[in-house]
Length: 443
Image (cartoon, rainbow, N blue to C red; front, side, top):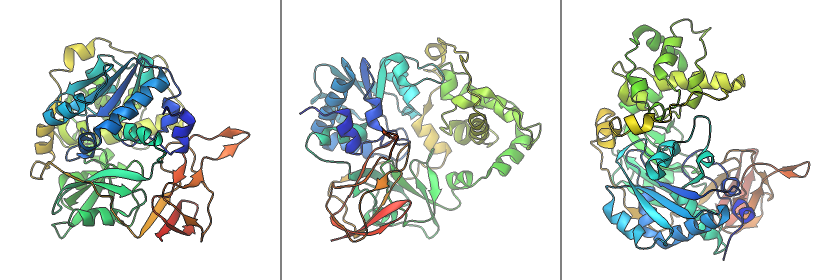
């Protein structure tokens, strides 16, 4: 059975590994290649690899559906070459017009710009998207969710990894809206007395202190770290501290720029220039237009800078100000041959990165617990994607079943807003409907 882009929207499929861009919008385009992001470059995360190993046939079906929708003649699965067993399992199920692209174990191989270059040899111009070079990029879990639609299954589950200072690192299937605390408990709880929690990956995730918060469609992992860990301390910096230390200590060595992955592709992103800009005044920081092409991977801040400064933070602040002023850089300079000349010799090995940021002492595996985690209550956030928050179509006291639509994309002036519908992830009764979420108690 072939699925349609509208079915994908109604099923609630969004990007499972990033900001949650609605998948049906991507698949409304035309491209010659669909690239699957199974690089999973964030240290300690393993849920995509476990999904590929345990749901290979469904994954391949999802890739086939995506290729048919965009008219692609080739499907490319980007997986780290060190996962030889997983690669063999996937290759055994791929169709003739699908291949595996073995990737180096480097960070950030999962950035879609880096992935497209490594997998199919095309460089996406600065400020553009993969479609500019004829490609569509999908996360591995997103692809699996597309396949489920053919069986009439909406998006109600999330795959994620719990790792770090826990008793048993694990990859889980959980109902969307399950509390983070339940995921931590499934990993045996923490092994330390002063835990802090990074949601997502150690490099690009965020600190969360409230474990009652729910799992969303984009939640990829929970990393447990002690409160004095390097990652925790750095994610706790505010803008004033970032700027004050940068003004006092940056010596313009340019390592942040020379090892910047997007700069290596030829994009005009130069973190050292952003660092230079804060030397003038905190209140009158000059804009550095190249910062709008920063992917905020944190490699410059956590690994490249010998002074332990925060170039990413400066770039992000600069980018935010530029975008708020609508100062988009049209036709930015692009060094098209830089990737071929520089990328191979300046990649950052994941093992070196983990040593640098203090993660190498943790178990770097998280086998799948395949049974769906049972929870007594879920909180389904109304905004789990780029676009408008969904509007509830249920009321307190309503009985709902798994997969039932409970909130839909808003419609204004006959146009449906950007987004994806939401569904009950457990059988139960609607306990609360608020401006931000729908709470369901188990039946």
